[in-house]
Image (cartoon, rainbow, N blue to C red; front, side, top):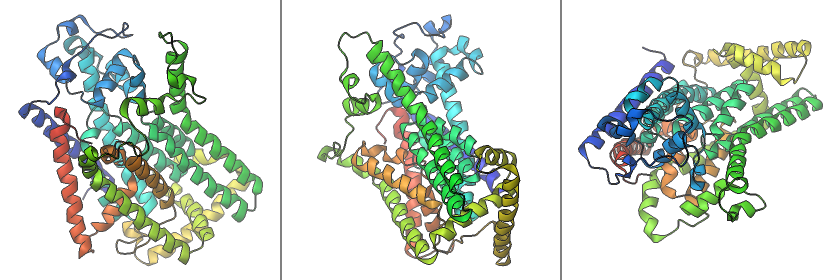
Length: 502
């Protein structure tokens, strides 16, 4: 039997092949509702990488490939080709356009003379996003094992992520795959102790999607754990202050890409814009372009989507929202039980001590050790002594666990035990905020893909699908499977043909 991580990589690859096959079949068998994606007006200004001569007389193949960019994919491809020409185009953050433009001018550049630049951009986007999803699935599994301490639950949750209801977006010209890759990868490295790598990856997630900036909250949580450990356990208040300051700086770094892009938009529109009259948002005390675009062009705002005519969209989003609410309630109850049975102090010390053993035994030893050295929380001599001491304590705890027969499977929290570690807390807080925003502020049908990279949803679902559970859990398990399969099929049929789907 293949190792679980290898199996997840193969399943993620198989899921992408399945979704792409279904999408292409749907495109061949049904006529698109909107064929405007095939239109290709010239850039307002000459692109920095002009298309070849053959692209002006594009073949049917090139046109067909270009038309695979649908919905938001049209905007991403346009931004990659022509830059940010219009105010509303700044709603689409730059990581995906910049990445596919780079690929089209390097790895896939030989295809440009045959297909034209726009078609190669679309190919680059699809290849990049599908590869990124497979890597994201691998990180999802590693993160789940790290947080849940249950390889069985982590594997089931990862399988669900591979075949999640928003799968079609992860195989299209959308930013979901890059966001999932850098957010899940960043969280894995953060809770493994490789904080510098985590900071960079989480910052990149904020340049893929605006909600990536919220990942700074995880860094704050981890900094609080380090500060508590330094102040209470080590009796080193200055180390605690240093941990808090470092955490604040790292969190600020995660926000930087998003706000740098807002500053770029301000300079292009408000300072160097062609219009004589300033746009309304340029005159605001905090000229935030993204929030203006969402409100002005898409009608996003608190309770603005609560209309009778939007009831079908609420129904479309109800499975994702229901599963999210269940996850929040479930883990909130378990965390409440955890706080009643074990002191927070013991939980924090166990997390910090246990991480030393995990970092030592993981495949990322070099990265983790370098990150630990770079924190500067203690000098080399004292640090080595402290690390050895605390590794001994944590190793003793691991040895005790092995007496119960759980280490052979990597299980600390069992399938049938309603337990959860403290590290689940920031994930639940993050999911709660995202769910509230999706339901009350955003276009609610977007919830399916907006929440699709939130690990607690799959963790809770994997608990329901645990083999030993029966009765109502078994019935809800069938519902979850039907929901996932149905939305993969619906998404693969509707989305590529320009029909509305989340």
